[in-house]
Image 1 (cartoon, rainbow, N blue to C red):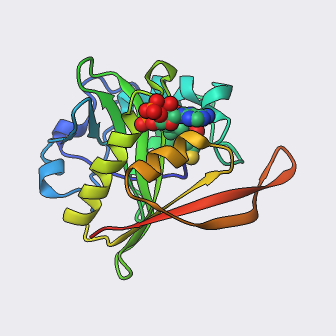
Image 2 (image 1 turned 90 degrees about the horizontal axis):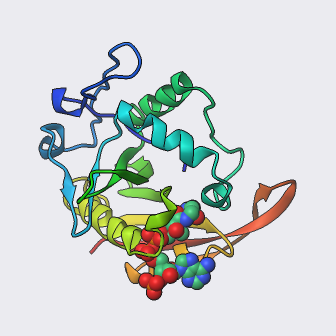
Length: 210
Ligand SMILES: CC(C)(COP(=O)(O)OP(=O)(O)OC[C@H]1O[C@@H](n2cnc3c(N)ncnc32)[C@H](O)[C@@H]1OP(=O)(O)O)[C@@H](O)C(=O)NCCC(=O)NCCS
C-alpha cells in the first residue's frame, strides 16, 4: 500500500526503540481515544498505530514473493532497518493517511496492516489499502474483520462518507473481503498499472458509509 500515517503519545512509542530512542508523533486523524493509547478492538484482531517494533515484521513481509504478488510496483521495500523505520515514520506523519498495524488479539503478534489513504476531508473520501503479511493467518477472516472495523472508524471518527479500494485483477481474496463488507463494484480500470513490464487492469470497489 502507499505510505500512510502518524501518531504518538508516550503509550505509542516502542518500549524498546530499536534505533536511537526514536519516537513517533501522533496523526491528526487519530481521535483522542486512539491518542491515549487505546486500540480498535475486534473479535480476533486489534488495530493499533505503527510502532518502531514493527520493523522486523515489515522486513520479512517485504521480501516474501507471495505476500508481494499483488502489491503495486514499484515495490516499496526498504532494505535496511533504518530505511524501514523511516518508511513507518513517513506513514505516520502522512497528512492524507492513517495507518494501523493489524495485531492478533491473543498473541499480540503483528500480522498485517490496513490504512486509509488519499483522505480528503472536504469531499469526505478515502482509499483503503491492506494486506496480511503473516501467511499462516490467510483465509481466517482477518481482513474481512479489519475492513469492517476501519469502515466504522472512518464513519464515526473521521466523518468520511465514501471509501474506495482498488486491487489488481485476479486477487480474488480482496474481492471477497470487499463484497463481504458491502463494497460495490465501481468498474475496471484498463491498463492502470504496469507489472513486470506489462500493463495490467485493476478493479475498483466503493462503499458509501451510511
Ligand atoms: C488477499 C488478502 C488481503 C485476504 O485477506 P484474508 O484475511 O486472508 O481474507 P479473509 O480470510 O477475510 O477472506 C478471504 C476469503 O477469500 C478466500 N480467498 C482468498 N484467496 C482466494 C483465491 N485466490 N480464490 C478464491 N478465494 C480466495 C478465502 O478463502 C476467504 O474465504 P472463506 O472465508 O470463505 O474461506 C490476504 O490474503 C493478503 O494480504 N494476501 C497477500 C497480499 C495481498 O494480496 N494484499 C492485497 C493487496 S491489494
